[in-house]
Image 1 (cartoon, rainbow, N blue to C red):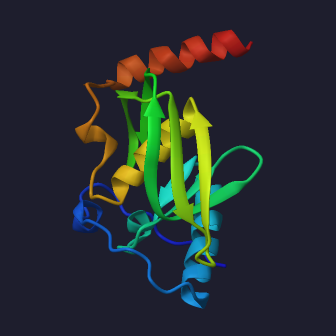
Image 2: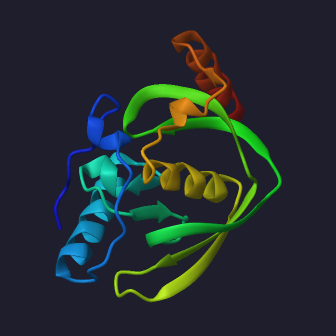
Amino acid sequence: MALRNILTAENPTLKRVCRPVTSFDDRLATLLDDMKETLAKANGVGLAAPQVGIVRRAVIVDVGDQMIELVNPKILESAGEQDGLEGCLSVPDHYGMVKRPNYVKVEAQDRHGDWHEYEGEGLIARCFCHELEHLDGHLFTEKAYHMLSDEEMDRLMEAQEEENA
């Protein structure tokens, strides 16, 4: 396994629509393993292949007790609504308010090509939506209805520290 560089917003690769994965081989396994290591090192919740320069439909999502692999993912169902703060490893130090479904069901293949369904609520649903948008060349900044200023972020962090004290 190896750490991969995470591309930032100005890189045109992030605007490309990803191609489906068709070969479930050692190259895919290496990509997924590298993405897991890269995500863990970056302390993120999700990572899409285009964020590491690979224009393929593959995503890693940290669901708390494990990291799941979503290859050729599709959203099957969504319900409810949540409104919350979002950031992105490809848009460092910028955060915005984004409306997302509160529940999402996703169908995806694993590294062997087998199909699975995954469900998530709250943060996991948000992450599914966020990462799948990367596969179609979109960043959360396009969907954010308000980008937080540095002062707003400072106040939010202070409030969170007080809450945790």
